[in-house]
Image (cartoon, rainbow, N blue to C red; front, side, top):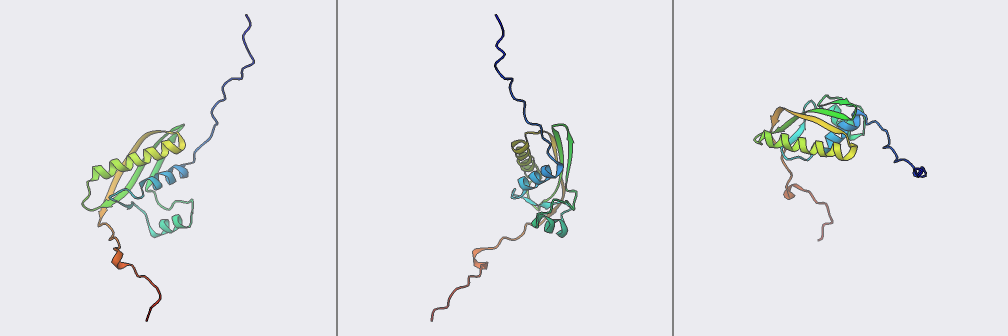
Length: 139
């Protein structure tokens, strides 16, 4: 009996490379909004402005990425709010970054080291009373 050779072999997954700057961007977006996170360590006005205008160039070394094939390791330096439990913030950062990188890239995350470099008072939140509403004056 002859083998059926009419079937095509399974397609191989597409080959692609994920640049370090993409991993850094994914990590940054994952961390923003985590309770207790204030900012990335080393963040400056220059790097904050660069992020606002969409610059791909990084002016700080707050996220260090080490790639080896499809494996990736990260070291993330952050400043947290004074009074928060460091372990809880670090764990939330690790989970958020891990999920983001795996979901978007499919890469194998070997490690995520979170280094808390400082604490700061949490920024004050504006209340509804602080909001100024402009409108017509009815007389």
